[in-house]
Amino acid sequence: MLTPAFELLQDKSYLTLVIKAPYAKVSDAEIFIEDEEVRFFSKPYFLRLNLPGKLIEDGRESAKYNSDDGSFTIKIPKATEGEIFEGLDMLTKLLTPKGQTSAASPLIQVLDSSTEATNPAGTELEIDEDFDWHIDQKVYVEEELPLDAPKYGFGNTKSGVFKRLQEDIIDVVSLRDPDGCCPTERREKRTQAEQDKFDPDYYLADLYDDGIVQDLMNYRAPWEKQLKSMEQVKFTDSENEKMRNLPKKEYLLEEKQLIGIYLGLVDLLFAYAYNHRSTESENNVESAWTICNLSATLSWLDEFHSIEDVVVSSLRRSLCYPLYRQWAFSTKVLSDTRHILKQGKTYILKCLLEIEDLLTHTYPYYILNNLYITDYCVWIQTASDKRLASLTDALTTMSVHKDMVGLNLCEVEVEAAEENDHSVNVLTESVSQIGLLPHKGVLVSSNTKDSDDDSTESESSSYESSETDDESTETDDESTETDDKSTESGDENTECGDENKLVTNNAENDEDNEQNISHKKKCDEDTQVNEMEKHETFLNGEFTNSKENIKNVNGSHGHEGSPVITCGVVHTRH
Image (cartoon, rainbow, N blue to C red):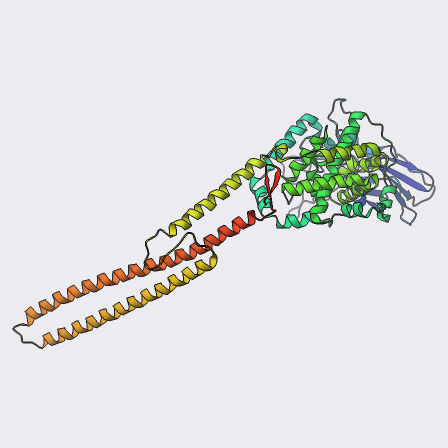
């Protein structure tokens, strides 16, 4: 926790506490008053003061927040009116917990290891268990930053913020050491992180399975309705309240700073438009994350120098991080950004106020309001209409293609198409081989005209297979009758005399062996024929299904008027 800078003032009736907490989460600020102790908490700040006199809560206490300098002013009545609190300028003493007057002593102290304890036998040594559970506080000291320290924030006017907040606020931005990276290094690390994050399989999945994406692209966003209705943009009561709480500032900016601010606005509005379209204007718990991660301004503290820079950054990040990663969807969001800019400053301010509200209620992204969004909300009200129109025209006339984002999208799509064509060819070749297999009584044609003929052939094959089974059954019956006759012959020979018994038995055994061998060969042949015909029936069915799949694949890519995208160029089949 951070100990904020503070000062104390008093009169006969009140004690006034002024706390400077520019990066506090104002919506979650809490104040506790209990006799001589006052506690203030608002992430990431915590302050506890032990005062020389008692205070009271009787309904007269008040607290105000000044957005101009990020300070809280707390006015608390004294328990004894007219009492003068001494030592209010001794800040270290005020931060010291009650009862603690010196540095903490060791918890273990050895008096004399050679002598026994003096406590009576059978009694335990009394141990002091009064521990200090308070947070250690240090007086805030403003650090002097070098003149060449890396700058960031609105107009690159801030520095050293993360150096103090990094331990208490984690993952606010993707850049690990914002106060130690120059703008060039930030850009290099950002592009490398995007290159590592890009997933070709994810991209191809959204490219070919685009049912949900198509529905989102057909959704009519609020700015489209507003542009069509031509009605005047109006603020809600909630938005008016937010504007009243904005700081009263005037900005003296150089031309280089202004260019970066206008281009950063495009970056923010692209992220805003993506969130709106992907959620159909129903913000959810992921909305703040989506906006911050799509915007290189918010996630990497990056600055832009040309319209192409900001467009490439927005398109790249939309294909690497969010839920839907499809080129057509990203270009649709870019078109939404143009429509928002066409609406003018009033509509842009509504969008910025919505972003500020989302970040305010999402930890730890509310810090980005202090760095960027709040200043954008104040500045846009005085921005030049002519420059906004010029920015919109530049964005409208700019052509985009897949090669410009540097993610090898064309190569990924070509490889996927070749692999798909290869799979179709292998499947076609496998199906054509079915007609070349040896078979009995079944004719398989690879030039079948339609699925009805395939179905007829399959039924014919099944019928002939059934006839073959019947023939095999009759053969088995004949073999059984032969066995019965052999058995009867054996019985008759048994009744012969003892003299011819041995010769007769040998002859019968030889005859039985020959018949058994003949019967076994015939059964094996019948079994092989049956297995071959069953396999042939199965292959005919596979052939029918494969041909239907091929027709479906060709149909899905060959409808008249369907667009085919190759390397960013849209062709239409006729």
